[in-house]
Length: 472
Ligand code: HEM
Image (cartoon, rainbow, N blue to C red; front, side, top):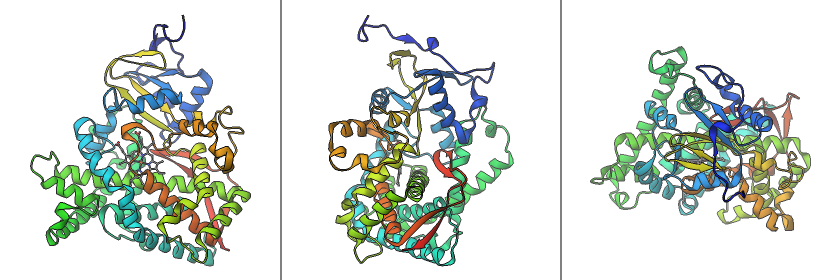
């Protein structure tokens, strides 16, 4: 029988890791390392394999063509796993990421528009200002020899940029350092991650100290968000033209809220403001931190990125011409390479809405499916010397070859299909701005010889990466 006529296999026929009565394989799910556990099982048992989640069996796959097919078949045949929707709603942060069906479609249009290239171009002077602030902060740190946790510094930058672009407010956490929203936002992601991997939803029955702390963090962020919403309302009241042509996401959400039968509620407005703050913060900051860690370790790559920044920025210490961003081709290749080796979203979790066949396995409706996003990027057939950080593989004739185009398609750091990341252009722009600024002005050196570890906190970050900057 060939592949086309072969009958689908049963999920129950697949290999699986050890599993225990009542709890299945969940005791192995250490939230900060869950992606490493699933990747290790893929190596040990082969893919596809299945995992006992106590109440249901989950399919785990790493085939990029099948992953792309699932991502494209949303919101019809597949959805994000159900706990995403319920956990986000309970926390009062339901928005585009966690919603499904018609709710999702309504929100998607608004969010996509707010992050389109036209909005990015209009906001560019704001981005230059925030990048200059980060430069000033780094210059002070370089003068005093301060050892930096760059991931934290980048989170302040990404929060400031998102708030400026999407909410029209200059919150300047870079200079305030201890600003409330920043401090509290950081704690929300790991808490969601813990709840998503929980064997039992304890928080619905008892409030442990971690839950009380989470409520406090959420309340602080919500207070800041209420302030952004009040300011946006006042802007619309003062300038009725904004009701016809909102200038940013928060104004667009408020205008939609007021439109008759729009289906938008106050909770949709604040939930999406929260969602965008969260989704734009760690993902971009963690990608920047991984990229910087590679550049710190690979001196030749750092020198190449410095030479490019010198050529593109010239006399300027920060790139201040929007139309020159595309000239940062080496930086872009280095970013792509960092995302290949360290995708900050290494697992996407979905479930089937109806009976489907995935990787030749027949699945019932409501079967959870974990897609491993990294293995295809480490395939030596597609990426020679797969474990090496080599931006050159994306450049010149090699980068333009058909093999490179095919290899590019298997990497999906921003997801794919109708739900692909709406912030990808913003994220790439932020990464280009920060990296070129750092390369133009500083030499980055890693501090300490401890290996940097991967820690999953919904988005995957380099734990233990510390660096010192020296002026060039
Ligand atoms: C390097 C940075 C980033 C990475 C790697 C990243 C990655 C992702 C991934 C993998 C998804 C899931 C896509 C899917 O299901 O197909 C996603 C969704 C999303 N991202 Fe990003 N993201 C980044 C930056 C941003 C930024 C800057 C924003 C906004 C300010 C943002 C907002 C969102 C939102 C709202 C969604 C949900 C989309 C939906 O469900 O329709 N992301 N992102």
